Amino acid sequence: MSNRTIAVNDALYDYIIEQSLREPSVLQELRMATAELGDIKRMQIAPEQGQFMAMLVRLTGASRLLEVGTFTGYSTLACALALPEHGAITACDISEAWTRLGQHYWQKAGVHNKIHLRLGPAAETLEALLAEGQANRFDMMFIDADKGGYDTYYELGLQLVRPGGLILIDNVLWGGDVVDANSPDKDTQAIQRLNAKLANDPRITLSLLPIGDGLTLARRNDNP
Image (cartoon, rainbow, N blue to C red; front, top):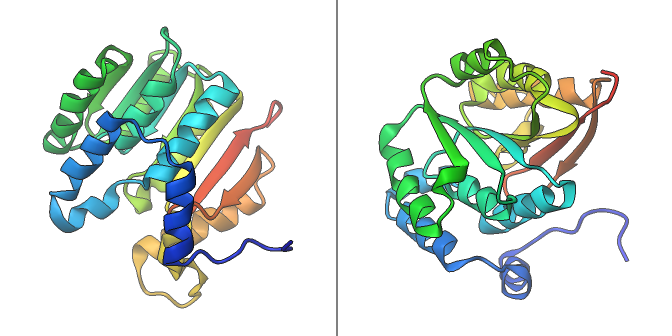
């Protein structure tokens, strides 16, 4: 037994993957295709995180998802495969090239009709969704984009996600750099500020998990 989360070394991580990962072949193909992009592949979530997010979709019965930061669409596809037939994801990104890679695999998996891609600055897209009357309409939101924009996306997300809905925020441990109170890095500082804000935000119920690069689950309270 342990009264704290255990450290995960390479051998234990491999064991976790071997014993628990059930990655559909089309997801694996997309992950391998993204790996060919070089160093930028680090922007893709870990496969076990994708599986966990898909589990959350099923556990919560979510049918309307919102994603900020799609990249090559791995998280999008993982969640789309978990959605009910009538479910849909609004996916926001600024890159036509990166999302084009994902679209090939969305089509191959037969879930392209569930994914509505909106290209452009995410804050503008989220504001547009509010203007379209989409407040309180989404069951779950995933934020994995530019770190300086996280707080803006979170605040807009609280308006777009329904009471009781989930906001998932990626990279909240930022490779461990968040513990450096004197870090000069702007992205690190942005994540540190958001983490501190969420820790005391009465509008949400909070859990920060050491999965992938750190994943925060923020449930919007019924009476924020």
